[in-house]
Every structure is written in C-alpha cells, then in structure tokens.
Length: 448
Picture: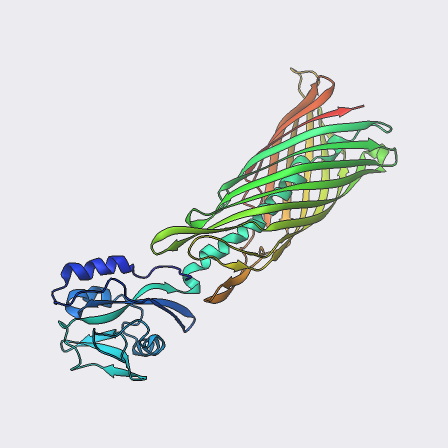
C-alpha cells in the first residue's frame, strides 16, 4: 500500500477513543482499511467505534467535515468494504460524519446499494457507532516537495562538471609547455555546495598528459568526480562518476600571446538517491541508483599578459561551454512510498568573461601570486523537471528548480616551482549560483 502525508494517525485516534469510550461494545482487534481515490486525492480510510460527544475535535479534522458531497462520494466508494457501522448490522457501511446540529451528527452511509443522508434523528451525539476516519490523505501537494527534491540528482552532476571545467581546467594556459615538450599533471578540487537551499560537498581528482606539437598542444585527462547533497526529510543524493576530457590549445597570434582552447568531454556515473518523506507521521525513505551520462563542449580565447601593470600581468579571456546531462529512469525500492521516475535531461550553457593576474612574490623567488575574477551567465532559466508515477495512486509532472542566471567568481592563490615541477594552490568562491560556493584547487605539473 502506498501512503503519503498522514492527516490523522489511526493509533493516536484509537487512543483518544479508547480513553473516553463509555459504551459497552468492544472494538474488534482488526477493522478493515480501505484505500480509495477521488478528486485527485487518495484516502486510506479505517473506522473506530466512538460517538460525536467523545471525539468531536477529531471528527472536525476529517477532510469531508463540512463537505457533504465528499462524504457521499467516499461512502459510495468504500461501500461496506471497511465494515458495517454496527456489529450484527448487515449490508451497510461505516458512517461518514460531515456536520452537526441539534444534538445530532450529520452522516452519510452506504446501505443496500446506495448512499443515504441523515442529518437529524438517525444517531444522537452520544450514541456510538463505527465512524470513518482517514489514516492518510494522499495528495500530490502533500508530497511535491519530496518528489521535486530529486532534481538535485541532475544538479549534483552539473555541479561536478562545473568544478571540472571551471575548477581544474579554469586556467588552461597553465598546462601549456614549449613546442616539442610533453607534460604530466595531477590535480584535485574540493569544496562546499551550500548556495540557497543546498547543503553538500563536491570534489574531483584527475591525472592528465599533454604534448605540444608546435601548431597545437593536445591534452588528455581522466578523472573522478563526486558530490554529496542533503535533501528534504533526511534524504540525500550521492553522485559519482568518471570522465575523459580531450583538449587542444591552439596559438592564434602566438607573438601576442593569444591562444584558443577547444575541448570535449564525456562523463559516466551513478547517482545514489535516497528520497525522504513523511509516512504515518514518521520519517521514511525509498532508494534508487540510476546511471548518468553527460557530454559537453568548451571553447575559450585567452590573451596572455595583454596588459602589464607594474609587475603584474593581466590576461583577459572569454569562455563558452555547453553540457548535456541525462539521468536514467528508475523505480525506487524500500520504504512505504516508492515511486517511479522518468528519465530526465538537463542542459547547461554558460558564457564567461574574466581575467587572470600573475604577480611575482619578491620575498619568495620562483613563486607568483595569482588571482582570477570573472562574470558568468547561464542561458537556461530552469533545471530539469521531475516526472513519474506513484504506482496505483497518481502521476506527477513537476517543474524544475529556478536557476541563477548571473554570478561572479573570484580566486586567489600561489604557484611556483617545487622540485622538478610546478605546484599550484588556489582558493575560489562564487556569489549565489549553481556552482559550489567555495572550493580549494591544487595541482602539480611536470614538463619534460
């Protein structure tokens, strides 16, 4: 049985009834529970032996209180499958109390194939019968937040790729070596992803090689990405993957320090999603591990040391990237309310305009103080929507999350010669955006 947000716990209600019950009839150990759907909502309905005087406050919390048409519709759907309104009374259903007046509860009830209405004279407020009460009221509105939170699965993948392209590969000319030379590097990034309602971490590690053939330098890198993000109701998503990136650095006006960088990448991984929700007033969750596939393109133009201010070189650049991330369809397992989710695809198109600076440190020969400042714009306005079905209850088609279109990124660090290679360490941060709010990037590179 699939259930969602609890309108009234049957165990709590039973305690109320038993504590105040004055009638002589005992409550059976098991009364049937029936699940019916009406008007876009699904109701799990049981009954308890009580009277209006004893349980008036609880009667008034029922979704059909004050709604005679809903009481009539549900009574007609439940019929006698949830039991009769009294022991020994046949061909009847339980009582749906929808109002009160003149000392009588107004009731709808099923009898001999039809729904009857009785407002005065059928049952006094102190007479006890089996009345209908909802165990859980299942509506799309009550679970939309839980279902929609799974879009963080795709977002986590995009955050990984943002860190790959604009973290470890945010300064492609750092990998440039002299014509005829080869290069090898290792790099890693780690950061926090806490912008807006997000709460998590992200990181990556890679190794790469390159060879400058004179007319262009070709680089190949492979790496691992990971991201962790907390979801509502103690849920979480863990998105891990591996990538392959091909990149070429092409001199455009080499004498003036103008270079173009063109790259493509593929990313393959898995998103472990634990979706949390409220089930019978308790936290519950269902899990799934869909596969992910992503590809992307990136082009960039750098003007190395276009301007020199005192002893600081300023290198402007313009960058355009596109990625397409797909999360496979999946069906959750475990928990009280598993759902099926359709596959979804998210696109991310970004333009960046910025500059890097490099300043020799007079107190540390061979080391430079490096900075970065850029403005970024994302062209899409929303992340991927969430579509699927809660089996046996309803389908859902929820919009994606709004994304931040414009933000700033800044970074500062130190790089210099350590042993036979070059070591770089940089701290980066962004204003409100889909990228991590801050991360540390480090790399070590050899040229030979």
